[in-house]
Length: 196
Image (cartoon, rainbow, N blue to C red; front, top):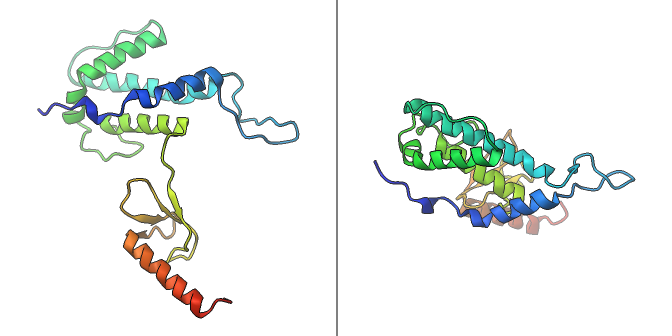
């Protein structure tokens, strides 16, 4: 069985400080109404950071339970503080990570939001933390209308090799060269008939 290198996972030092600052200081909700408060703003500092934290802690415990049950290792020890439970769980997951990523029965599942694939779960946590701390890359909005539906819904996500129409009724995929050709056609049409 191949050994999974820890270097394939992003360094926690890139996102942990932001989560800790959020826990200490909270986040500001958008101002709304006449008194400047929003019903979505946290009621106490750190409340917003509990949402992804609770989600990730619950999923960590579930991820630990899977290999334990499948490998006949017995149930995890309940009780103690949340920090102690997370520490024990992370140690257990780290000890069985190679098996979980290569041998778990769900490793063939696609990497999507509802996958039980351990690698997909870990990636989803990382993505959630990046999004929560504002360190994720936003999709690039291309301002030419879609060649099929003619709506301004063309986007390219960071790292993708294609541009996608986000109109659910269209969904066309374009390569960057196809998009460039499309914009050239639009520019030529505009030069021929600028008043339209």
